[in-house]
Amino acid sequence: MILSGRLIMSDAIIVENIDFSYENLPVLKNVSLRVRLGEVTAIMGENGAGKTTLIKHFNGLLKPQKGRVIVFGKDTREASVSELSRRVGIVFQNPNHQLFAETVEEEVAFAMKNFGFPPEKIEERVAHILDFMGLTIYKEKSPFNLSIGERKRVCIAAVLSYDPDVIVFDEPTAGQDHQSKLKLRRLIEELKSRRKGIVVVTHDVEFAALLADKVVILSKGRVLAEGPTRPIITMYELMRNARLSMPQIALVAHLLKKKGLQVRNTVVTPEELAVELIRFKSLKEEAHNDEQNATRR
Image (cartoon, rainbow, N blue to C red):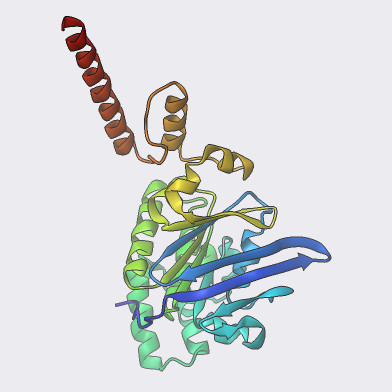
C-alpha cells in the first residue's frame, strides 16, 4: 500500500488571520482556514488572488507576517521547512520548478533518502509508486525528456513516495486530457479514503465540483467564501464577483430558473439536471390535471 493513514486527529493545518506581502504589496489579507484529514479542500480564485502564496505557508516555505499557521500542532515560524515538508507535500503547478534529478527513479527516491528511509524501504516504495503511477518504463529516463503530463506524474510520485499526511496539488489538471483527469480524481479519492488531507488549487470548477468536500474562494488576497463546495460554486453572483466560472450545468440551471423553471441551483451533472427537468415536467402535468379536474367540477 502507498499510504499508511496513521493519523487520527482531524485538523492538520490551521491558518489564523494571516497577512503576507511581497515588497510592501499585500498578497494575503487576514486569511483563515482549516485543512482536515480525510477531506478534500479546493482553493479557487482568479490569477493573482494569492492561492500559491497561501499554500507555500502550509510547509513553511513562507512565514506569515501577521497571524499564524499551525501544522499538526506546530507553529510554522518555529519549525524548519524540512520538518514541515515531511508532513505536508506540495506538488507545484510547473514540474520544471520541482524536478532536478538525472533519472525518474532518482527523482522519486530523493525525498526518502533525505528523510532517512532505509535503503530496502526506498527500493520497495520506489518500485511500487512507479508502477502505481504508470512510470516504470521511464525509470531510467531523464524526467526532462518526458511530456508535461508525465513530468507532473513524476512530481506526484516523488511526493507520494514518502507518505506525507497532507498533499497539496497546485493546478493539477492544467494541460491534462480527460483520461488523465479521471486517473487524478481516482488517486485523490484513494488518498482521501486513507485519511489524508488533500488540498487542490484549481481553476477547474468542474473538477472541484465532483471532488471537493469544501471550497475556499480567494479574491484579491481575502477569503470571499468558505464552505461546502456545491452551495458556493453554484452561487452566480459570488462566482462572478470572484471572476470564476460556474460549472456549466449549474449555469444552465441558473438560466432555466430565470426563465421560470423551478430547478435546484446546486445541480452540477447532466444526470442531476435531467432529474430536475423530469421533476419539473411532472409538477407541471400534475398542476395541469388538477386545473382540469377543478374545471370539470
